[in-house]
Image 1 (cartoon, rainbow, N blue to C red):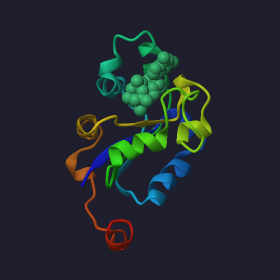
Image 2 (image 1 turned 135 degrees about the vertical axis):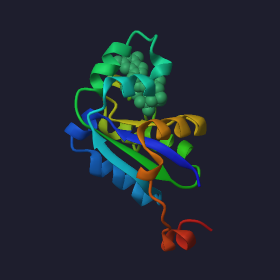
Image 3 (image 1 turned 120 degrees about the horizontal axis):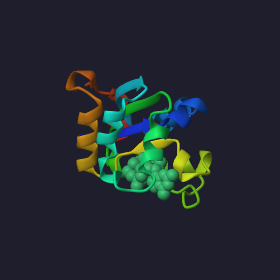
Image 4 (image 1 turned 90 degrees about the vertical axis):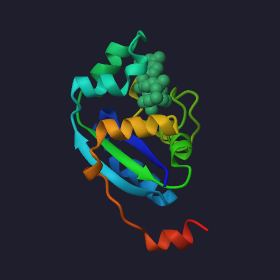
Length: 150
Ligand code: GTP
Ligand code: MG
């Protein structure tokens, strides 16, 4: 089953959006299989965003992401990587549609509330970075097998 890594960033935690964001994934029928809250160490954030290390905003991004606790999650379900990105909305809130998380709750790219893996390969890499295998749950949702999937 496909999995993605979703994170409520420190601004999302401070703004009490954790429940709202989790609820959207639950209501869509996705299954929560990993969950933890932490203030992320700098080294982990640098690995997570290593592709952006040369970008001018990188120091600000590291400061923002390390500024407080975040909530790291793994969600599982059909096409959840692409659907997760669609549910988050565009990186720049000016381009994120109303109805998306960013389109409903943000104004600034540098305070865009949430993260989602942008490909299946990125999801696998990020899940491995943030979670140990034994921290991920395996269970079936009987209702979903019939009423979310055909
Ligand atoms: P993530 O889900 O967080 O990875 O966002 P994304 O995939 O939509 O965008 P990207 O990976 O390109 O950038 C990662 C994060 O860096 C964004 O979510 C923003 O928080 C931040 N970021 C990206 N571009 C800018 C920028 O131009 N200025 C600032 N201040 N932050 C940026
Ligand atoms: Mg990204």
